[in-house]
Length: 121
Image (cartoon, rainbow, N blue to C red; front, side, top):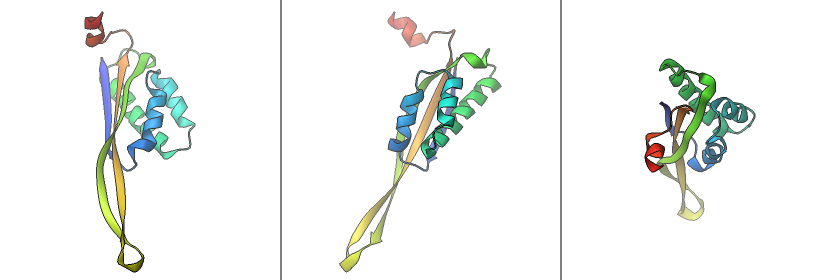
């Protein structure tokens, strides 16, 4: 069974968070939480909170064994961009792009194979 958690409109660019999403993809949920806990970056904190939320969703929905959860999908998509202009010298303007991100994390039990994987075999 799959358990999802999302953090939409995260106040950081997707590029800065994506490196940590790649780091935990395919790992056990406990191991991924330990890895993220020891990084000082803000992107790791955001992804850690989403991972804790997904683990809480799994516990709430009755996962058989919390130690068997695997990070099936960790995706960071770009969100909207807030565009502003800052005045510069001699009447020119400098664009400011404030980027947001959408973080999607999916945990899965190890026992059940995904329906797509079973159909491919």
